[in-house]
Length: 353
Image 1 (cartoon, rainbow, N blue to C red):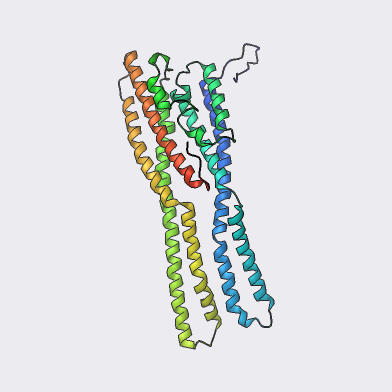
Image 2 (cartoon, rainbow, N blue to C red):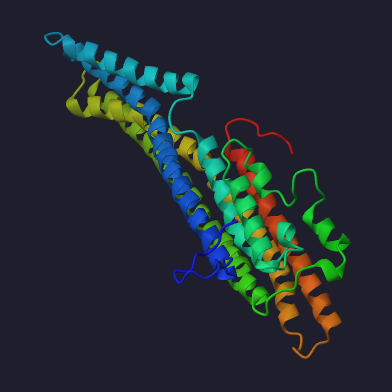
């Protein structure tokens, strides 16, 4: 168990509640940085992978179109074919060998980060592993054990986000089964702090990111439509030019039209592939649903704060019990969304817990 050493030689003191929360936030920030870095690498790699096939098609098109005019420079068509083969080989190697930044590592880091983000508020509201811990030394020891479990990379991150300990009952069941005199009391600012730092923050995050993902999906959808419509218009122009000048005559303009007409459809296909890669539409609707579901629970928790402060001990315990129950319902909603996201983002099927 961690303690704070005093310079005056006095007995070391256990960390305060603020120290414990700061310790959890430090771990959260470290894993958050790791997850963001791996996400950036995975997204950039995915973008470049999606455009490899259109590049190969464009190289092939240029080679076919310009080959009849390169009799004196035979190296140019050969160079274009070799370049096309290299691009296709890279794309195939990526597919077969599963190269590049792996979404599994990014997803696992994100799940651990969110588990650490939640941990601070489990401690604040004395739920889950902190339900019966009321003294600081006991809380510090539990925090250390939880941090070690969440950040252990060999364990499945799904176990870190679930609302139960290994081989034990779910936290909501433990809350109902534990006698009231064994449950740790809440600080007077615990519920407002949870509402502000966790519930409202997460609700706003869902709402904002739902709009962002919806805008991203519209952007790729409009771009794909624009490119495919452009490809149709260019093909019509190419046909008109051939009819007007004769099929045997090939001006520079006709050559360019031919290259563009063949190259645009794969570009539109790449836009559709990126739209599927980002899953923006699914994420937008998922975030919208969870924002609405979270709003109802947050409203119920807000109503508990409207109760008059002059309460008996029994009434105060009842309000705190109801607050804890709502907190676990909120955390169960958030955990379900994370596990659902994790099962979609991972390239392999995660184990069912």
